[in-house]
Length: 392
Ligand code: SF4
Ligand code: SF4
Image (cartoon, rainbow, N blue to C red):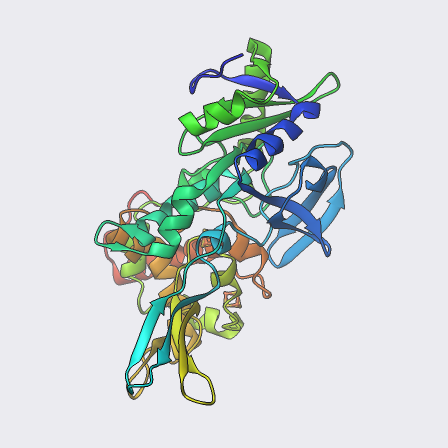
């Protein structure tokens, strides 16, 4: 069957290997979820056998546990600590190098990016949004990062529509899931019941349609589409957390002196885990290194975190010397200043920062507590409520 970009098809579990064959034949490097050292990570995949068949996880604040499922689902879990970010925006990258020349000058050259084109297999809708959020950061017309742009333009994206949600998920609050309606090359919904194990597939681009045309599949029937819809509904029903985004920008801008920051300071370790696992955080620093002879120099860019004092060091000292000021910077940037900078929220509701915070700090809870404390302050001051739509 010749695929179109708007007609859903069905790929059987046994034919899914055809997806890998078609992508590898096009010289893509498939990257996706696999089990390693007790967690589901993202890594290069050789085929379907590398997927976490029959595995799931239990996630909560500061909790992650890999567990066996009762079935053989291939994508029956949520997001692990890895986002797709390292593949488009590497944690460490050599930007250029320079050599001293015999005449006392120097010659510089940009370091070519040797990475092949990646095919991302199993991108969750929230993470697809996170990639789009980083596109706005790295591919703005006047300010394009060449390394990111090259990798992003070459990438092929296979979304997996969520059929379950973790206790830490809140994509419905951020309007980023649990179903993606576009922005992918292919989208799969895994259907697994007593009678079938198959994938409803939609092509979202010409490249996706061309790959799909090489995979054995049939046209989706109404019961396949109904089963896919039921998957989405199940994920919505299981959504573990919510974040009330009503007026959140003004709320945070008006909470500079909130008492909550002092409480956070007592708990936050300033370890930066939340920024490392976050699929949208993009802070970096650069480091120049030379060899001992002084003839060769390199400039490296690597990920940084707004939780380190070095990151906010400006001549004479750090402008955010306390943990309270650094947590506030992170949360206010994610949910408020990001909107002014890039026109979207910097949070997609993936929940990673909740799971991987070693002390279980949960931004959905923090926003709720800041909202409550600001409301109480307003009431005590006899003010009219500033955020009339906020829920209790
Ligand atoms: S702030 Fe937390 S929940 Fe939001 S996108 Fe980043 S890691 Fe995910
Ligand atoms: S909020 Fe949690 S993960 Fe983030 S810096 Fe503080 S202790 Fe580390």
